[in-house]
Length: 252
Image (cartoon, rainbow, N blue to C red):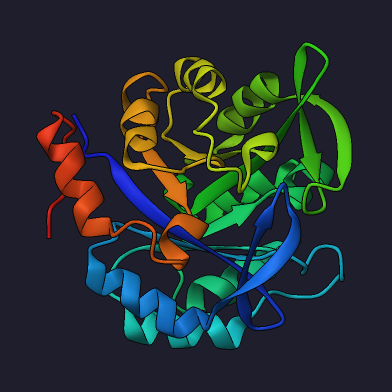
């Protein structure tokens, strides 16, 4: 049995970490390099860095930030945003990232998943899925949550896994920034449908939410941002709580 992972997420816009609610009302949360180093020192298992406006602005992701983060931390980190081709992936991995996260480009060109997995290995390819509930079905959204695709979330997760994705980063848009808890039913459904790890994102508000997503949601990792960025919960305290409640977790 693999240890569960606690993963702070740094949403980056114009070189600064930001956080909002339902992908809106963004507030400044600090410098990405300083925050990355802080979370590494606090015992984070991994980090995720997302350039949240790269796709909408049709530009490459932040190579300079990636290089600086790689010099400061010694845990795996994933980078997403503005990745459109194999060369983009290569540049990001060479800059120091351990994994690539693709969302919009995966929907536009699913072959990119297959090619990336073949060249760099499935362990490097993370497909991020932004999920929003429309009536009675969960739909995939792209372009920083602004554009519906018509794709069913569970069906898409199965397809990208077959294409070579080594991990799914599943964000419930309706829960993003609300601190109301993860969407455990959806997380569990995806986890049971595929054979690769699922990282749950969207809704963390207290320690109990992490316990719930690991037990009821059957997630392999839990991602959070504002809860950590604004000092509401320390990673060390969270890990102790989880260990005390029977969750296999890496302690610093």
